[in-house]
Amino acid sequence: MTGGPPATEPAVKRTGFLELFFDLVFVFAVTQLVTMLEADHGPGGWFHVVLMAWMVWWAWSQFTWAGNAIDLDDRPTRVAVLGLTGVTLLFAAAIPAAFIGGGGWRFAVPYVTVRLGALALYWAGLRHDPAHQAALRSYIPVAVISPVVILAGAAAPPGVRQWVWLAAVVVDVASALAAGRGEFQISPAHFAERHALFVIIALGEAVIGVGATLAGLEVSPMVVGTTAAAFLIVASQWWGYFDWVQGAVESRLASEQDLRRRAHLARDLFSFGHLPIVLGTVVLAAGLEHALAHPDEPLDATGRTMVGVGLVLFLVGFIAGNLRANGGLRPERVVALAVVLLGVVVVAPHVTALVLLWMLAATLVLLAGTETARRRSAAPGPVSH
Image 1 (cartoon, helix red, strand yellow):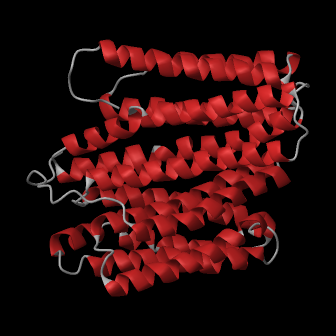
Image 2 (cartoon, one colour; image 1 turned 120 degrees about the vertical axis):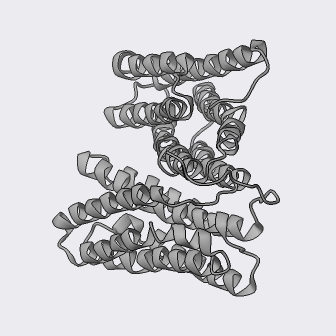
C-alpha cells in the first residue's frame, strides 16, 4: 500500500505543560479503575474494569492524536483543553458507579462531552491544514457514533448497559480502522513521549499502591522483604520499557516515511498496543497490594489472578508489539511469560506471597539483564521494537 509522498518532518514537537496537566486527571482515573477492581473482582467486575479501562484509554488516546497534530499553545485552544480537563475529572469521579443505576448518566454525560470536545478541537485545529483535515474525514463520521451509543447505554438498565457500552468499544475499533484510509501527519517524538508518560502514570499507581499499603502495616522483616520484592517488580517494569522500548518504538515510527503506513503503525503500536501494557500494570498494582497485606500466607485466588493477569498483559503487550513492528519474537519475554504463568498457576498456591513475589522479581530482573546484555553485544544498527 502506498500513501503519498514521503513524510517531511517539522521541528521536533515535545509534550507541553498543558498536556501534563491534562494527564493529572487520568492519574485519578487510573486509581478509580483499581477501586473498581477491589470492589468487585468476580467475572462481572473484571469485565467492567476492562471495559472501563478501554473507555478511559480511548478518551485519552483521542486527545493525544489531536494534541499531536494541532497547536495547543493557541489561547482559545488552551482554554478549551482546560475546560475539558475539568470535565474529565467529573467522569473519572463517576467511574466506580458507572454500571450501577443512575451512575451511568453521571459517567456518560461528561465522558461524551470530553470525547466530542476532543474531536471538535482536532477538526478546528487543522483548519489551516486542509490535507490533514481531509484525512480526519475518514475518522470522524464513525468516531461520533460511539458517544451516541454510550449515551444510549447510560439510559439502559444496568444489566444491559455493559453490552451497549461494549458495542461502543466495537465502534471505536471500527473508527480507528476506518481512519487507516487517511494520511495523518504524526510527530513520532511527541507521540511516543505521550504514551511513555501514560506508562509512567500506570507505574505510579503501582508505587502509590505499594506505599499506601506499607504505611498501614506494622514493619517486620517479612513486610520489608515483600515490599522490596514488590518494588523490584515495578522497577523492572520501568526498566523493561524505558531502557529500550520507549526509544525503540519512537525510532521505528520515525523510520516509516510513508504517511499512511506511519499512521497505521502509530495506531497499532500505541493506540491498540499500549493498552495491555498500561492495563497490566494497573491490575498488577492491585495484586501487589494483596500480597503485602498477608506476606506470610499464600496469595488468595484474587491476588494470584491480579498478579498473573497483570504481568501476562504487560509481557504480551511487548511481544505483540514486536511482532507488529518487525515481525519477530522477543524470546526472552516469551520465556518470562511462561515462567510467570508457571509461578502463578502452579507454584503460588504452595508458597507464601513473599516467596512468590521474589520469584517473579527475579524473573523480571533476569529478563531485563538478558535483554540489556544482548543489546550491548549486538552489532550497531537500527533500533527495533
